Image (cartoon, rainbow, N blue to C red; front, side):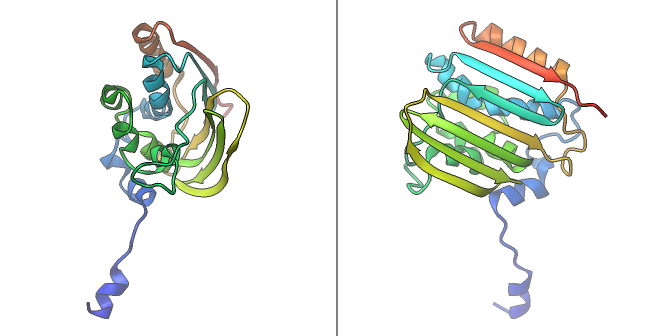
Length: 207
């Protein structure tokens, strides 16, 4: 290959691809898109709720800061296709992985249309703290790239997944989820999953 062409080739990570072309993955002009993105964090919880593994979901919205917590853990066993990574890390980094690795694939099409990896990519930061089946893991991402990983270790604490994230204002200038859009979506979830307890605390940002 000619040297000039080699200099022009840029290899992008999956997160960089999403960030450069966010409009290919969701409607950036949708006024409710911040709420829609925030709710992508629930797709694994819904998958587990179908089996009764997840019974409680808590959301805290404080301006642009979003915290999601539920009482089941993203899988921490090695991924079959990428054995050096846990399934949870695959969910958060590989596009559409959270769709194809669910037990109930209909969740991917109905409740996870954008996906966890795309959500992660368009966040300025995202921290995942996971406990599953006696194991625990902490991952910290910035702009979709892994910056800190506390290796898998043992724990006696109950299963839980906690995601704390902020949508990147350089991609979404209005990065604060709207309360009405969130409440409508959560109302629909409650009607679909009456056994799933869903609570939200919403604090609008002070401009």
